[in-house]
Image (tube, rainbow, N blue to C red):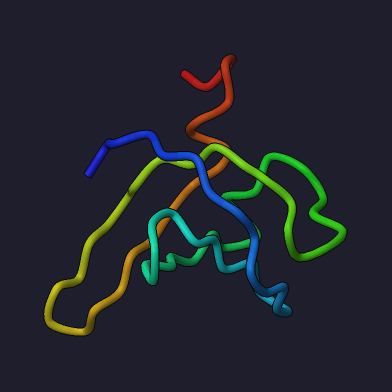
Length: 71
């Protein structure tokens, strides 16, 4: 957790976007954690890992916390 990663948007959904941060590894950026409007899949973004649920194999990410002015 807390690691900053660069990834590519793979899917836009009603409540956020999925971002591939490594080969075959995707995480969810909830819409509340987006720093900007994402218009399409394929967009590059920098994210911070906010939660790892190994049991459910889920990765939660935040673009907002990766923003330069995040504090």
